[in-house]
Image (cartoon, rainbow, N blue to C red; front, side):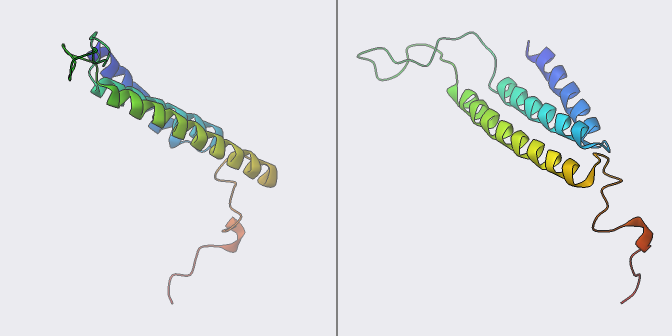
Length: 125
């Protein structure tokens, strides 16, 4: 199972990088979402997927009696999900506002600071 998830993580990273390098903002946002999901699966896979007992200590004992699951990767993934969702919501609002102001989602046409008709920047000072 870990090998299959490793291949899935590799494919998700490849697809997300392809989408992030796109010209269109919506594809970039989808790439960011896929990248965050790939990182979450990578953390989950690094925590070793095994069927062990939950991390509970029986009454009267000081430590668990058998091998237990590691709760740290699960806590990291929950935190990463919240952060990635809030980051995606911020980027979505930012992209929508840019589309409202500029009328396009193509990054080549979003040249407000450096218009093409101004020519190249000065080469010497």
